[in-house]
Length: 509
Ligand code: XMP
Image (cartoon, rainbow, N blue to C red; front, side, top):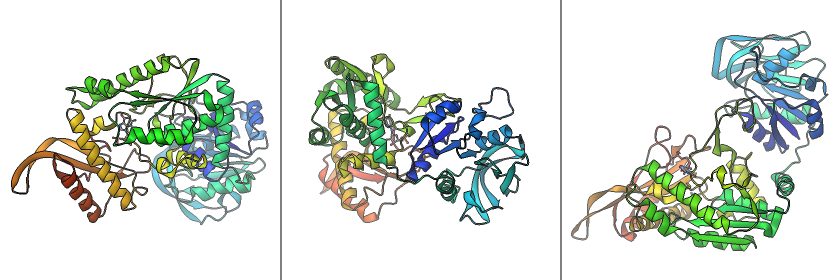
């Protein structure tokens, strides 16, 4: 395994993911981990992440200086490089020109770390400080126009460092460089699989949970399903699942979740029929944030009421993924930890009094999907597009009523069915219909109609932070439109949303 020491980088998780992509197990640890603790993990390599601090400022996060002498290969990235060089006899200064973005790097030494990398490579820089001088113990490996010491290695210790970020896709050969570090330098064999992550997660959860009962909320999405699947493997019948049907689910969704559940788990399932309660709470509410608040509140109440019926439950499992935690600067217990949660409705507050179990917290969505497949969950579930906690309420613009939700449900089901039929479901990230709060004039047969407008939204994105509208083929759009107008009573017009995020968002509310 490899440890990433987190100095408050936005990219620590991304580094970990890149390591895992090489089939090497990776964990993120605090920057101030001691050499004794490191030895306990017995890692093959250490990666020092970037971070927002300046090494020469008082209070800047540092690592246990003894780690450079453990004989374990170390790779310093950005701040990690500055720290390594500062600790081992170099000097770090504010750079003459701050460098953010793409830069061209000249590689001057092609041994081990840069093996197979050409003389000139594009790299991604993001720094205000840089190493201005290194001791004679270091060999320079690369430079850029503004950063004369862009990568170095130590002459006698297995210490390597680079100012640029190999983990981001804007450094196209970053993958090769990290691969070189992991295989040629650390000697990792690359035999780890996500299934091994499952094994470790199961052992960790068993140790955490003991013989207590765990409650897991199911949403119908892949995250909660994979969480439940892992827990089921860890504690079997000690798992109780709760599905709150808030009346804002997609067509046939409750039945689908129950069928999937009963096919895969033989454990306690509670379905809360909450439609009436949620729709009453939403009556007359049109403002998006007010909708979210009402739904969030009702969800917590429903969940609490149901959870009370489950005796000896001490833990609550949540399918929190890494990108759900939008960070300003750090991993949860990192040096600059100020965590903002995603605008996630469907989250539960700490006051419920449960201890949390979050086995997917370090993973990205595509890793969770792979894990789901390895755990034997059906492809259909594993590849399901994300669906927001507040459900169709934020896609039913204006007032949320049962008749309007029914119109939306039908339109949405047609859109998804046609996208699947065209073989486009997997290559798009999220597709759905939105019911607009306007009516438009149409003509059907010989009669004038004045009916609802449905907007179609389909996007492609890697991370859901930015997204582009999907360039769906016209014939697919035409089929969706014709079917919705013909088959869904009350709709006479269909539009396609061609806005990217930003400046629009994926959802309309
Ligand atoms: P936006 O609309 O912010 O959406 O571009 C980004 C992703 O987040 C989902 N989303 C939500 N998920 N509760 C959730 O659980 C919410 O309130 C919520 N709002 C948006 C959205 O579906 C998209 O995948």
